[in-house]
Image 1 (cartoon, rainbow, N blue to C red):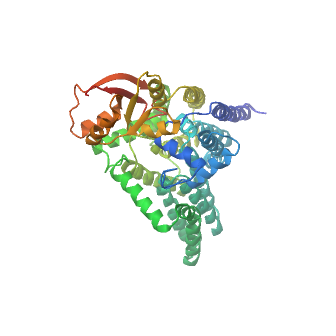
Image 2: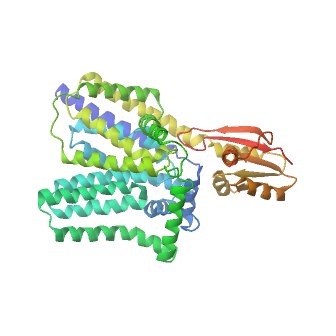
Image 3: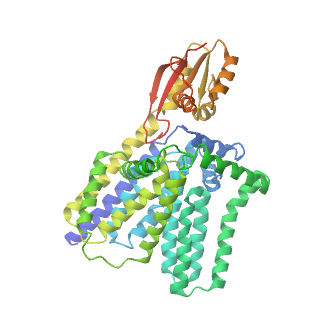
Length: 487
């Protein structure tokens, strides 16, 4: 065996070991907490699926809940069942990631690329939460592979595979809808290069509609009627785009600030670097290296790369304008695609030994960061849990007014009275019925009062602050508890 073969073999072994360490760590450090409104929605749905009761909220994520229900047959905790389903399904994405990578680079570097992408720390910690992002990311990679398979296969029947996987992906997370543009590109390519006829296009479009109808009709039946389902969907989308969704229409931040947060914080700092200065430095160094080779002769662009750029751009616009900019998880597919692009540019050509070494170091750092973050995620109480423990220990009767935190408190079945409050007049009206109790309010409630033009200076006193990691709890990683002083 030559030294070159030995080095390639060592690279493959290192990549496999890294993947195994991450996978085992994910299963060992199972996240036991249900710490956000959405997580409660999903966990409740595992036991009883009810869209009207927001178990889960629209559009229902039926394939994700179905996976959780299956794991729930073996794992009693519904939240853990969803997380384990995420972990197992995400592990399957190793196959399409490797298949895609191997189309651009040698097998040894395809293995390294797969390990780097799979172990990207922000992806890993999101997979270890009872949220649909982990399963959706796995379905996304399988969908990308199916598009490549269909593009390269002269038999038009291969189109059925991406149509089916698109249904699976959207049935897990509907917000990935912009990636459906890949199907449009596929039809265009097949017509132009493989002579796909209009009759065949109609057949495949009907098949695509049937695939989507599988999960949509399931939701309609669960809701009881098509009219009821439509009303529910309109009510949800209205709230998402106007009241609480964090979209351009709903948010009160400027568009320039939104782009800055979206790009620098959500995609680069959180999605790619996972708030690690060392990761950020390595990626910056790699970018500088790639930029130095930018003007060297490049191979002709491959159709699949054009497809990836189109899909990236489509989702970029959607996530920027129609998703909550406070939550970096909405940019997760953009972050992993950028890492994939970097790996393609880096490993599809001859690279110096120092860059190979740096890439291996990056993989090792990601693995170490994953183990650390997974341990913290599984052992450190979320801020809302810490607040609950504090209030539970108070020796006086209380009434706690919250914003979204009350959904978690309901799930925990706490012993004290708590309510979600939105307006100051209603708070004044409601608090009259709790005379003799200590009135507590969270900082989100106070912010809401102030945004309504209410002056509460001198009426409140800060009594405690609770913190957790903002990677796990982007909105409620810090909760400040206030006591209402006015009688």
